[in-house]
Amino acid sequence: MFFASDFYIMATPKRKVSHARTSQRKAHWLGALSAPETMTCTNCGEITLLHHACPSCGYYRKRQVVKVKSASSDEAAS
Ligand SMILES: [Zn+2]
Image (spheres, helix red, strand yellow):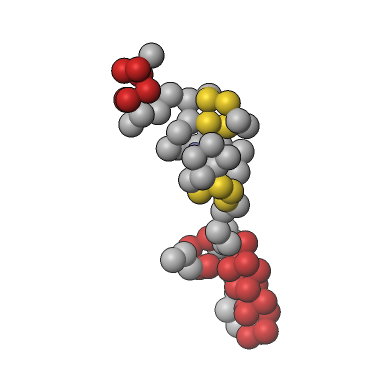
């Protein structure tokens, strides 16, 4: 789990900022730290990141773009 205080770029004066301002700022930072967008692979059904080749089968947009080392049975057949 990430904490908002790890991502502050500028220092914030403690005495000049109200509690409401502090909580509003932290809510914004925590909202930005949502989980990355995922999809299910159309080839193997694995959960993958959007706009990335599938790590388990190497498919992207219904064609193989990356050779996956774990799929050694395909290489032996061809
Ligand atoms: Zn896949």
